[in-house]
Length: 480
Image (cartoon, one colour):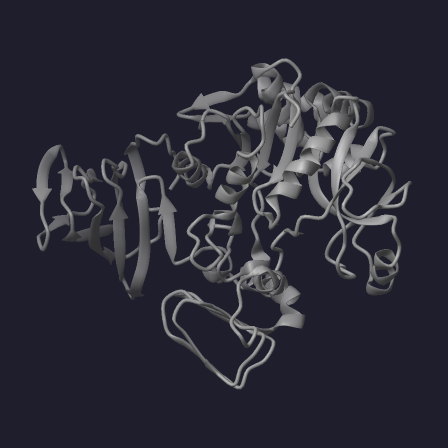
C-alpha cells in the first residue's frame, strides 16, 4: 500500500428501511449485527476492513443528531478516535456531506486522499478490497476522481451502472476511464449490460484528494461550496461531536456526488472491484451472503423448520417454526413479523411508507429505544398506564427532569440505583422500589459496576416521551 495519507470518510446517514422490521429509522441496519455468530455491526465491520490499510488517519463520520451516541459507542468499542463525528442538522445527500468531510480533513492534514465509504456495505474478500484501494490511490495522486465499480453478477435493477471506455479485464483492478453513469435500469437494459464487458455496478464508494473534489464541486455546483464552507466555519463542538451550522447548511442543494460532479467531470476513473460486494439492500441479498443449512435455509435465532428450503428465518425473541415453505423471508421482532416471498421483498419499502402515513410507530421506531445512558423497552401499555424495562449502563445517568402529566414507580431488578428526588438522594438495591411524585425534579443513575435493570410503571393522563422537561443533562440533550 502506498504511504500517502488516506482519510476514511464514513457516511452513516442511511435508514435501511428495506430491512424492516429489523432496521428502522430509529436504529438502522448499519448499527445492527446481521450475521450468525458475529456480534459486529456493519459499521464495525467497515472499520475493521479499513484497519488493514496502511497510512490511514482517524476516520471522519458524517451522521445525524439521533444516532450520534450509537456511533460514538460502537467506534469506542473498536478503539477509534471519536473526535471527528460530524452532525448534519438534516440530510442533504452525499455531495454536501463529502464537501463538509473534505473541509474537516483539510483542517487536520495537508491535502489528504479521501476514501469515501458507506457504513452499511458488506465485502467478502477484504484482500481484494485493499488491492483495489491501492490502485485507486495511485489514480487519486494523479488528480483523478475515482469511483469503485463492482463487476456485476446478475441483471440487478436496484443499482446504478457505470459504463467504461475500455473493456473490463477480470481479476484486474487497474483504473479505467468513465464513459458515463447510468441510473437504475429496467430489467431488459440490465440484462444487456451484464453481457457487455464495459459495464459495472455503481458502488457509491470513492477516492480523491480533498482539494480536488472541492475544486470540482466549486466548478459545477458552487452553492454547495459557499454554504458548506460557512456551515463548517460556524460549527459548534458539543462533547465529542461537531455540529455544523444549521442556517447555512439549510441552503446547500440536496444532490448526490454522482450528479453534482462525477457525471460532469472529465477526471472520473473507475476501479473494477470483484470482492463479493453488496450494499445489503434487501432481505434477499442478505440471504445470499449468509451461511445456510443443507436445505438452503438461513436460520438465525430459535428456528425449527420441516420440509422447507431456501428460506430466510430470523427470530429475535420467540421460536419461529416453518413447515413446507420455500423461498420466503420470515423475520420476527418483539413488535412486528414480516412474511414475504423473496422475489417480492423489494416492496417492503412500500409497506414502511404506508405504515408511516397511517401513523403507526412500528414504521419508524423499535420497541426498544437506545439512549446514551442505555435503553428502554416499552413492555406493555394501557389506558393511563405504561410499563417499561429500563437498562442503565455502569456510571451513566439519565437527565435531571420532571413531568407535568405522569407519576413513576421504579422497581430495581438487577444492580443498584441512585435516585435523586427534589435534591434528596436515595440508594435503592435489588427488589426495592421508589415512587416519583408528579412534578418532582428527579434523576436516575447507576453508581455500580454492572448494568442497572429496573421496571418503570408510569401512570397519568399523558405518557408520551415529550412530557420530559430536561433541567440538566450530561449528554447535552435538549429535546426528548
